[in-house]
Each structure stands twice: as structure tokens, then as C-alpha cells.
Length: 479
Image (cartoon, rainbow, N blue to C red; front, side, top):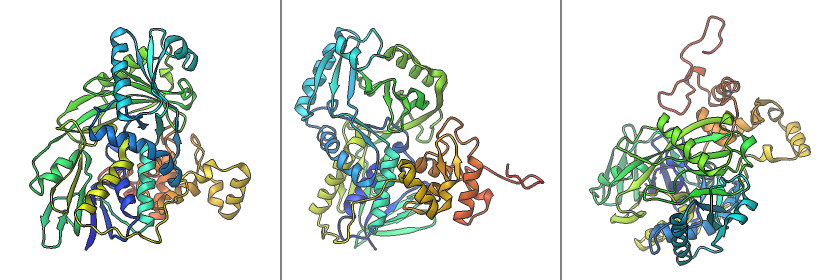
């Protein structure tokens, strides 16, 4: 029997698993997909919000500011890129200026440091590519950018290195209360645990209903994005927001920690919880709004577009509670959930302690995890030394991003190991360049086949039925 079962391997489940792995506990993470970070975590704006937007006194406000302050240290421990680039909420007229002043007051109440309103002259000095129609902005120096799936992979990997277990392709079908805790069942497996934490994202209401908790609902909010080439990454230095509405923070323009330029997201409530297709209307809206923000937008440098689904709860705030003994909900964790995730994890640990979970420190706990991009970030001399020890680092597989066979092999065998093409992409950036895997995809498939000891035809794009090759030609070339 496990002490803790965490349902969902997104950023909240990952951070919670890591926080709990500091103690002598038997922990299991249950994930319905073939990899971690497969829900809202893999497709969002990658922003560490300063904390001025959430209503004062809410869990969102408190945990956002707390989590934002924790993030630099956690990223350093986990070897994850973090850039404190600051953010700007821009205004185009006097109505926007009034909104910015309200955000300023709210941010000060929330405890956000360094907030101030700046005028057009200063704005053009720090962001010369902004539209001439922009009149003012709220400047938040504590805003930052990060890679959300890199952070999740690292957090879960660190938890696993400290003893936690991960079960993939475990779609929860039932949860039964027992004298010792709960039995959680999928179609082909079952797990027993004394405590259960529901971090199932967009499906967290479904999981709660399995124990009879009907107190909330979660619906999907579609967000579509456009990603531009690294040539465009320095068009803005800060994350540029529009004044927010009840549907969210609007279309942003932001650099990424890897040097690209990100535009989006749209914000459309939908019924389906699996529909991640991009739409022409959505892409058109992103383009229209982004063009209003910048004086010139090089859309010809577009690499890809994608869609993410946010988990929007029915109460207007994070839903972190205990509807039943030894069962914790962490539901409706929409924006600023990524920013708040370290603080949410600590909040959950506190709730578990109040319910009787004994927290005995793990004397062997190691919070440090080296970067997944150690070779990529190394100097020429360091790379040469690594190649001498392992020649696989000397074979370039992804030409666009300069990723080697050695890095791909590392991604397969390091906790939590990649099991498909998209898993390799998120861990190494191979297939994320201009060709989007057009050249390197077949070679990565061969490496996965060899290292996982499965047939070439069984390698998938993202698990399940996402097969890539169904047969071979006469000459043996995969197709």
C-alpha cells in the first residue's frame, strides 16, 4: 500500500510529488497518458505571473505571489531555465488606464513588489517595437518566463530519484473507500493508498465525483497560440499583456526561455475536453490582436501553431479542499496555476499534515537535479570531453536545434524517461526547429525503437494509437 497516490502528472501533481518526496513516504503518481505534462501543462503561456490580477484575498492571489517568489530557487535546484524578464500590461486609451490603476491597487494589496504605471515615452525606450497606439502600461518587474513542461519533467524526475513511482497509461475508472484508505482502479491495474490527491486537471471534477463529491464542475477553455522562429525572439524583452477581461489576460506577446516569440492565447469556453485542434478563426484572432500590440509582426517566420485547454473551475478560484477524509482536491487550477504551483504543493502538504499524515524527513532527500540540457549548454571544451567519453554526443540528429544522439538517449533513460516522439521533443527540443521533425523524426524513431527494445512500427508520436509507421516498403524503408 502507498502512503500517497497522486492522480495527474501535470505541474500541480509534479510539484506536489516533489514536495512530499522530502519525507519518508511511499508515493505513486498515476497518469492517464503515455507521458507526464500532457494536459494544460504542455500548452500554456509559460509565464510566471507577478500576482496583480487575481482578486485580493483569494487563493489565486495568495498562492500566486508566494509561488512566484519560490520559483527562482526551485528552478535553480531542478536545472530548469528561468528568466526574470518582467511584464507589461499595455493600455490604449483612458479606459485601459483606469483598469491599469485598479490592477496596480490590487497588486499592492496582494503583496506584489515594484509595480508602477509607466508612460508612452518610457515604454518606447524599453520596448521600441510596441505599437505607437499604446499610451501606458503597468510594469511588473517580478514577472518571469519559464518552460512549463521542462519544470514538470524535472519535478517528477526529482521526486522519482527520491523514491516516488510513476504509473503511466493509468486512466482512473473507480475509487473505492476502504478501512485503510482508498483503492484506485484503471481498466488493467489497481493501486491502494492511505491518502489520495486529485490533481487531474481538466478531469478533476470527474475524479471528485468518483468519491461522491459533486460540489464543483470543471470545463475546458480553448487557447490557441502561434510560435515564431528564434529570429523573432528579441522583438520584445518583456511579456506584453493586454488589459484583462473576465475570460482571461488576452492575447499576449512574449519571448520564450528558448529564444522564440509566442503569440496567444485565444479564450473560448467549449464542452469537449479532448478537442485540441487549432481553428482558422482562433489563429486569425491571435494575429489580429498581436498586430495591435506590435508595430511590425514577422508572421512569415511562423514555425507552428497549437492549442491548449485550460481547466476552469465553477467557483472562480482554485479549488483546494478535502471533501472526504484523506482525500484532497486540487482542481480548477487555471492561470496563474503554473506560477502558484510550488505554493500549492506546500499548501497540500499542510492539509495532509492536518489530516494526520506523519511527515518524517527523508534524510537521503536530494533536491538537486542537473539540467536536461547539460550537453547543449556546455562549452566547446566541455562538449569535446563528453564526446571522448561517449561518441553518441558527437552525432547530430536534429540539425535545426543541434541535438545529438547522446542527448536523446539520456532523455529515454533518465527519470521520467521519454517513451515517444513528443516525449523526446519536450525533453531535448529535437523536432522543435524549423522543419518540425521532418528530417530528424525517422532517426529519433530508430533510437526509441532500439533503446526501448520495441519494433520500429510500435513507436508512437504521443502514445495510444498515434502510430507513425504501419509497414515497411520493399526496400525496408519505414513509411
